[in-house]
Image (cartoon, rainbow, N blue to C red; front, side, top):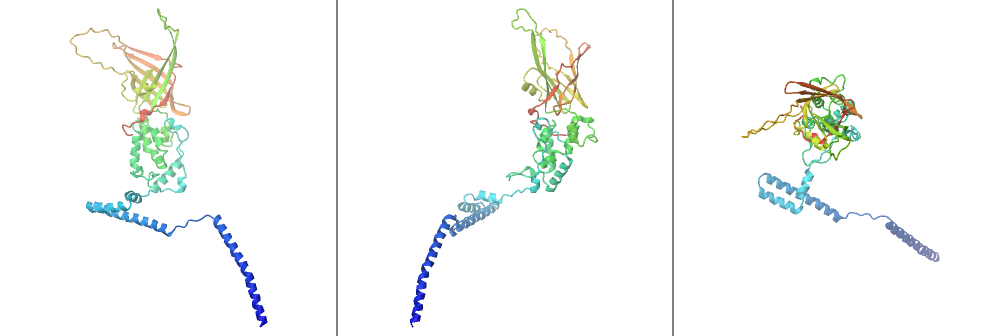
Length: 426
């Protein structure tokens, strides 16, 4: 009996000794757990009420869309009174339901282009090459063929970069785009705008390389002397860029300076022994063979505007025609006829004796040259003759020496000449 009592006493002592150690372990665990909670960020767990509010919002919007669509059906059937009921109920649930429904039903425009193809860039030219006329770029047949295959595979000339609420240009077929490009080039041969159009995307690049456009441009420049581009050139565009020709979207301008000896008259307060004389000569060519020339000391703005139209109002402008042969151009010009309005007066005035100055015809021959890597940019003088026909039948010819007397004419682009398009390229 004593032995059993001793054993029970020993077990009680061991259990009493083990209970403090367990409590210490639990206390240490609680402290460590609280420290970890303080250090780690708190994650927000969406509550059941928030989820239910989102679901309720979605269901409310869906119900509003259904009501609005029902209102549309009633309106199409002519039942306007019932349609207004559904519209009001939909707006009471979601005030901007009409705009939400429009955005959800808007078609998503996806560009059918591979990611690898998007990274490819067509580099037509660099720098300020468009300050010249058109870009003189060597045409790479492999590049054109590759881009043509891509455009044909996509079956679209271009794709809108952003979503459009209106009809995009990509909806037009290729035939309509090519006809629009004829208006872009126009009868004034604005090939610079065509080259700028080709820089937009690869579809426009291929459209601007249409052989028929460049063939019509070559025929308009050289006429019956156009011929075929083979074998000297690779294409009609290559022929247009490399063959000597004139530029039509601006003027050829030259500045002449010389010294004139002064005359000492009686009591002349402004006498100077020498006078520096400066004047400008402007020549503008039109594709059909018409040419205008103006010699003036006025500012360039007024002189350029005087040459804007084929029938100028300024009587100082010489009007004529030109012919292009290889790298030389021949001009024949006359002064404009002055229409005199003779009024029938009862009192007859004495007729004054008018000096017969004759009718003058100006013959010029110029050479087409490049200037600072700009093709067809300069026109040096070769010869300059003036033929005079008098009323009594006599004729006179003056051959002027152009050597070191007349500086070459250099081209300058005029923006106002190509702002409007009156006729397409034909």
